[in-house]
Length: 473
Image (cartoon, rainbow, N blue to C red; front, top):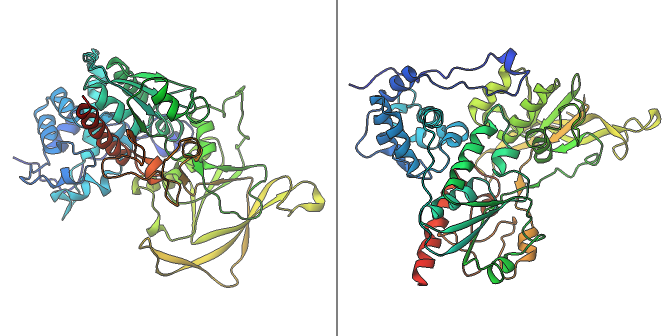
């Protein structure tokens, strides 16, 4: 009989006061008893609406049924048939707008905690199963994958399981893409990502780091000189956006992309770091933006001892970040300045030019108050400047978390690759670009989006590459 409790089993967490001072994972995960109890809330609907909300089509009721029985390894194997990164997805996917938004239990009460159960199953497997999957026999075909983020790793894994010889090229010194440089340790421990990468290596996937496609080697050379029969571009969206307001060149202004990369990948906050970040203890930090990246940058700043403000031009109801991330940020003492928009970053070089936005270091923000008008093209109410509302905020550091676009390097070095006006690579429904045998997916196509959507694009392209190369035999 189903467990008809109206609410999910709560996720155990570190105490907010404690966690605001460390980078350890905030959510502690379900116990076996909690997982089984939560799994028993599933009604096992015949039409499985939750599956329709999953970009990679995990058989959700099937794996949950195994959890309810206490057969956690069987549950993992069901998930693994469709997802290459279950421990990652269980932590960072926005389940509340995807699978859980379709859950029948959520119509009147809280949905089943699908993401929490996926995380539990993946963690149980990683803790209890040590043997790696066997490398499949080679089918003789070679495929190159550019980028080791979620789309690239998913594409590589799906192809490797079919016997393809896959080489992944990563620009940075560690594999994982945005999973290692963008998402903080307290949301996604890097050991989890490494475990997933190691699993792909066991399947025979080769990973070449410190290779910048378009500089070290071009796509044309990969195909013409290295013998790759198809290429998947999963290079992500690493080009940061700015507001183009006065003062963005001041010392103490970061893009969230740079800030998080230096925190997460380079550990620049540690004493003796090769590329240290500015000390933030006792400083005031403004993070401009309201998405998950803004929450990550704000919460990292808090852990480095800063007083942190989220500055966002719409109201709290329009924040694009996950509700859980907003809640965690508030619990940790981050202040939200909504309906507020910066118009200039103030700087100083000496006492005579203390408000000169062209020199020196950050000392503050000039902002205006906003009010909401009619909905714009995104469906959210358009923010409008409130007349006579300009004010200043004292700040020592400003982090711009306004989104990213695809890096133009690959398009500028690859002949015949069509790009849209936002810089994304144009693809068809199978991920095929305007170049034969060159596919693309994830943020390189869509601009910054979610991990699971990037994974879905990687799966789609892997299927299309397989069909293309089999047809060439």
